[in-house]
Length: 270
Length: 270
DNA sequence: CGGCAAATTGAAAAGACTCAAAGTAAGTGG
DNA sequence: CCACTTACTTTGAGTCTTTTCAATTTGCCG
Image (cartoon, rainbow over all chains, first blue to last red):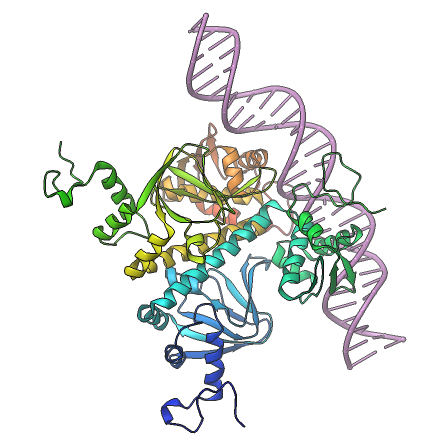
């Protein structure tokens, strides 16, 4: 059986024979922000010096406060990057899927991990030792440019999270979250949109810095206000994205309570 | 009058004559994370292609959502990086003083500014055009390494802010803030510490994602609990840093209310 | 159908925000 | 030196949001 991803015959010179696993890892690297566009031979040398690690759902890839010794590239699965508090509460910083690069912060400022990473689904990650990664960056400056860009993007995302946590209330965070998910994987229709949620209320809550119950209530309120329509608890329909966006971004967001003179954005439903 | 910072005689060959202003800018660049350790001739060429901008207290250096066209280096003064909500509320992301590099995010991921920067005191910043900065990075890879390190550090700081905002209550944030300030500029004594605050309650509140009054109350409560002692409203004395740190980091932080069975950390005062 | 996990809802309480009032401190001008 | 202004801080009281606990309800799978 011939594999059409295979640019190289399996029967050619020994130097060019790639195992299935190695090929998978190659295409994983190619799909990342950081390694995309870097010549294959470079990526192959990265792979040769790397190892693969498999983690099951719920397993920890690494913990904050551990000394960082490697860069991780997600080749399969989905993981979440979180900060933990002592009582087990966690705040999700980001969700990372195939093609994500993890622990770049610790590699490039030389300290410990700044977050804990836990698998949401069974996952597979490439582990590239710190010294190897730094070597590669030295040899291929393009790589370092990509790293800078990635870090900048993460920082931008981070700023958004901070704004959300500090200036918006939970209703609005939920609205914002729904819009984001919609744009990522929803079936969009000029004004409206429909998505199936992949997370349960608890998981959404962790990501939004709140709790199950509050998020649940937010869904109810948004629905009562007519901003969303639910089909079961996972299928969301947004009749008017603009309206929802207005709500998500507004200050003093009162959904449907007694009509307040000062709230120009109150949405009511008979 | 001879200047001992001046490695170059003012009367030597024309090529080496530096104006006072240029020398100031040079030493500003030298003191940054990003440009520190880079040869002077490189820095001088950066300076030659840069301009200087002065902003007064309260003036805006740049606004989020403006297109970014330059990197900024603070050569004098102090500014705050914030996210604004429509009603004028602001969340401080960071405070940047002499030697800080601003807008790196926008330069390296090629978009708009991700925050608004406002002067806390009259300040002076070097403005290095984006294309010039990128050119410099291309020519001096060391610069790009420094940029990566700086971005990583900012990301680390950002994660800390997120954790603070989402898992700690205001009392604890104030405690944490006091500890940080103490370590930066306090007169430390094995266990105790003393600092003079530079910010007023409002400013602290913005940085901690809260309000004047709540922060004020937090100070009162911390004092009542014996964790701090105030002299006026600016001079803080921390008798036991460890105790305060425990409080700042603990979950379910009840200061001095009725004794709760589950709160192993309740601090009471007869 | 029973059993289980997730989701929802209600009620009470805690925390945080807002507005208003009063207190404090430093600086100005008489 | 004292009254007066101004800016900042503190405190009280009421309200809103969020959390927490408890009780159901829903939906799904065996």
